[in-house]
Amino acid sequence: MKIAIIGAGFGGMAAAYDLRRAGHAVTIYEAAEQAGGLAAGFKQPGWDWWVDKFYHHWFASDKHMLGLIEELGWSDQVLFPRPYTVMYHQGRDDDGRFYPFDSILAALLYPGLGWGLDKIRFGLVGLYLRLSSNWRPLEKTTVDAWMRKWAGDRVYERMWLPLVQGKFGPYAKDVNMAWLWARLHARTTRLGTFEGGFQAFADQFAAHLSEMGVRILFNARAERIATAAGGGLTLTVNSAEQHFDQALVTTSPGLLAKLAPQLPEDYLRGLLGLHSMGAVVMTLALDRQLSAEGYYWYNIPKSAGFPFLALVEHTNFVPAEHFGGDHIIYCGDYLEVGHEYFSLSEEELLERFIPGIQRVNPDFRREWVKGVWVHKTHYAQPVPLVDHSANIPDIRTPLPGLYFASMSQVYPWDRGTNFAVEIGRKAAGIMGQQV
Image (tube, rainbow, N blue to C red; front, side):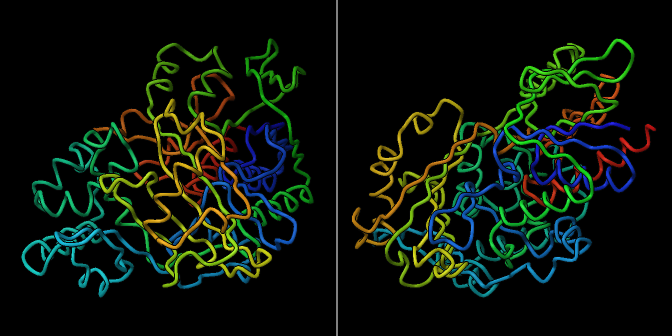
C-alpha cells in the first residue's frame, strides 16, 4: 500500500518503521525543517549536543522507547546519569528552600509533611498507587476528591495539589485520578537521555528510515485530507495533491479536525471537545553553574509565587562540556492558550523570570546570560476529565483509510516519547491489517 504519515515525531517515525518493514511504500510529511516533533532540539556553534526545545528525558520503565532503540541496535547510546530532583518547601519561619526529593530516604527526610501521620499516609497512598494495576475505577473520580479522602487535605495540598495545579491550571479540580495513578505507577527516579540529545536520536532514526526506503519531506505542510473519487485519500501538501491508500495523522486533535472536515460531525465535535494545555519554555545559556549543590530538577508550586512551574539545570544532568562550557537551564510552564506568556518576547519573558531564578540562587545576575531562546506550543498536555476513556478517539477514524495517533490517545498514560512510540506502532499494526 501507499501510505502517508503526517508528522515526523517519534510516533510518526515509529509507525513508518513498522509499515515499511511490512513492505508498504511510506512517505512522511513534516511541516518543520527537522524531525522530532515536540522532542526536537536546537544547537549553537560550539555545542556538540542538541538542546531540547521542550525538555525531555526517559524513565527506566519506558519499555516501548527503549525497546525500539534496542531493536535498532543503539542501546549503547542511551545514558542514565544520576541527577538530583528537589522540592520547594516554605516553613513558618523562613523564606522557603529546596529539599532533595528523588528517593525513599529523601522523601522521608522532606520536612513538608512533618514526622507524624501525614508522612505515613503519604507513603501508604503512594505505595497503593504503585502496586495497584486497576485504574478504571479511578477515572470515575477526580484527583482532588480521591486524594482528600485517602491522603487527607494537608498531604494533598502540600504534595499533590501543586503538581496538578501546575500541570492543568483551571482544570486542576477536574482532572481524574487515573492520570495521577499512571504517573506514580509507571515512572522511575532514574532518568535517561540519548547521546547527543533527543534530536540526535530523531536525526539518526530519520536517516535509518530513509535508508529503508521511507521518504521524509520537511517543510511540507499538510493542508487537507479528503476521500478520493476512485478510492483511497487525496492529501494536499503545500498546495499540491497526492493520492494514498491510507494516511496516519500524528498531530493534535484540533489540527486533524481542520485537515479532514469530511469527518462526521459527531467525530469532529469529539475532537474539538478534547482539552489541552499549552507550554512556554525559556532556555538560557549561562556562563556559570546556577545550582552550587548540583541540583537538576526544581519542582516549584505556583502558590509560592514563582513565575514558572519548573526550573531544570540541564548541565547538572549532561556535562556542560557538551555545550562548549555553557550551562543550560530551562524555565518552563504549562499554560492555557491565550496566556500572556505566549505573546511576550524573549527579553520580556526573561525580565519576568529573573526574580524567580534569583530565588533559586540570589547571586544570579542578568550578566550571566549568554543566550536566550523561547519555544512555545499550544498542544503540550492533554487534560483527562472524569470518565475520560469514553472520550478517546479511536485510531481508526470514520473516514475510510484515515487513522489518528496522538498523545491525546495514550490515556491513562501521560504524554511522552515512550507512549508516542507505543501508539504509533499500534496504529501501524491496525493499518497493516486493512490490506
